Length: 497
Image (cartoon, rainbow, N blue to C red; front, side, top):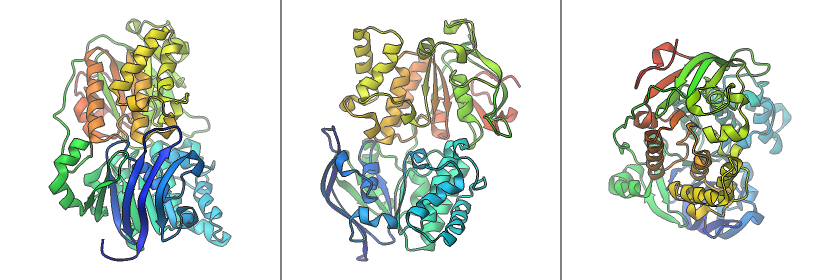
């Protein structure tokens, strides 16, 4: 603190989601000056995202209990919404319009920006994030990373004095993440803009911030200071809590021993979305065997998620087929034609957006959906639920609504639901998104154990550390094609070019 004007002030602030016994955050005392750039850290579930929502004035008074006070520029956050710009951890939840340009314009129209200024600011916002499509491009044809860039464009177009970013590069490939960091750097340099950012890629954003604030779960601020001094003095302590700290690499890579047997045989499978001008997935041949971890890498929009959905039997290929070999013990039909009850017990899927697979009002009920669909008895369902709650560190959230969980907790719940039917193949799209250091290590250990027991893993990811720690084989995608030079052998080659 330098004694300047206060942009954000919290005194004894806390929030508890409706129906929860534990507070998401409590006893937070914090002043952030105008122009300060703050990195907000803490283990998964420490209330970082909740705090950003509180500053943005977006916590529904009827949706929980509040303690203390928070002000933005001396005003109630709800009265200061025109001065704050927020990018949520799940950017897709901020899309409201069918066309990209209209989505960027939506916030400007709500702030009653003069009509003759709107489209110039839309163009500037889209250009600032190097958005690759014209403003009439359909938002339902964007990849996760492209959605993230569009939401950032809409936020920058508002020209906020306070910028609140929740994992702004989480769904982006390395080039896209570097681009967004450059955009953020330019944005805060161009104006005396206050920045509060949650980001797990700590080492990559240190040059963007001048202060680190660490929250503890259900508590207040436990560390506050200049970034390098904080990590030098308390790095080990923070890492033990689960906070990612610079120069603290995960344990050495581990390798499995894939078996020669084949579970899935991808035979010329390709996919083209309706009205698209090119294939999202070019005709592809691929095999997957038991006890094998296959990583799918590549830039945003390259087709990784489409390939994952085709491999999971959730997307019918436009060409070719994905065939389950006898070891899958399924019907003699392409995977996408298997009955849901059978498919759920053979292939588990973790979507890029966890909310897309939640169906129930509590975490425990959510974990019971799959086993009940698969025909488990009541006792087996209870045992499965209790086991997964313990293994994924979710036991204290058993009665919580899945939609009130933190991003990292939602991701762990989505993994747990995929494991609930003990599948032979597990397909995961960005499985480490939102994980703190402790839960990242536990998730890698859990997946390694599944692989050792014969489960095949397919992971679409930008997390290079995760690839190095777990993958037996890596395939790289670009423009819907598995590129020959990067369909590499970490284990035995399984891509037929």
